[in-house]
Image 1: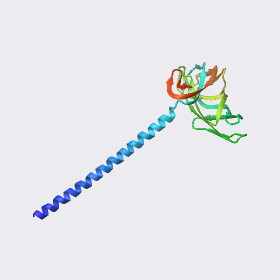
Image 2: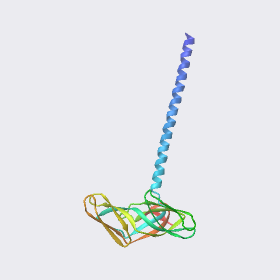
Image 3: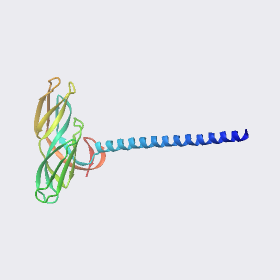
Image 4: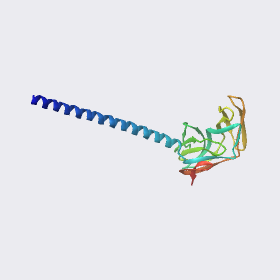
Length: 201
């Protein structure tokens, strides 16, 4: 009888250690999953809200019948950093521009991260440029949000010192957007300042 009791105690001890190992594995899996989720979330948030690059400032913006606007496509006059050759480019959200310089064959790229334009924010977005410098902002395309119903409508080829009008595709209210001029500012920090995020060099 004593031998049987000793065998039962050994079996209980073995089963307890196995359960402990399984619990430890589950805990490790949960930590790995949580860690991955947190890491991915921080990466996406950081990329979207990064206030650095070449900022497009929209001056003297006019909002009539629209609450906010967002640039959907920018057209730019760029110059190669190496040889100075100029080239026109266009890019938008998740649609970068890439080309080899026609003279020195250096690879040029331009990306755009749009910002939300409204009466209290003059930042139109940020350009990410490689091996090139922006010389001039050319006509832009925008989405306008109707103040009455919130529906978005597009306006195209808007130039400085002009106005563009469109009827809301939802409630047919008239919307108008225009701006007096634009500035291109090199931003090196991630802090926000009034009138458009980012710090200036």
